Length: 250
Image (tube, rainbow, N blue to C red):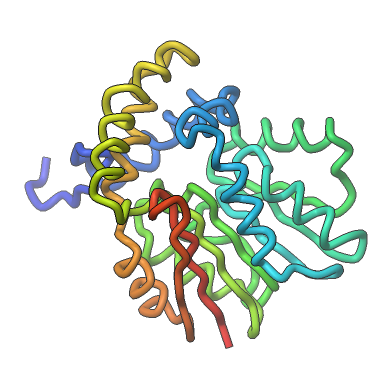
């Protein structure tokens, strides 16, 4: 084995670059059926409010084309589909087939059909032409991408001029006491709840670790600018437990 082999973080572990995609896929294959429950556990239910706030700030209008990348089980897709109407289009895209399947079944069961497409794609090589979407979102997905810079460049590429990217992701807690409490919850309680709810302690442990390895607010803002975005800012929610980063393509 070559000693120059590139490695990347997988939670707190280092793994060969090409293995991370497989390992992350394994985590999400494992949690797909319990993904909504898992999000509720990880965020104490607040993820629904964070997502609602993201949708309110999106400025989405009837007729718009929206990419919901790492769309998971379709929380954002559902709301966007209602707002873009019959003349608009929402694409739920995810690298993980099991997640797309769960999302599609769930949305069809809720009567969301006709203006939603489903596709399996890698964030680092999006299968869409340049200048396709008015809005792109990636909620709780960027931290699982191996090459985040490449993914941000791809998201910039597929946005139309005037388009906006919204990245909703766990971030760095700004309040020291809350940060301590949140760390305790993440590393001591969360994996045990994962075992209890989904009999899957390891996946929840990875998810807690992946949050700590994700770039902080200022770093991610700079990464967006470096990827080509003409303007970027962020909004902390819940004292920085999550941050909503926004980037604009002019």
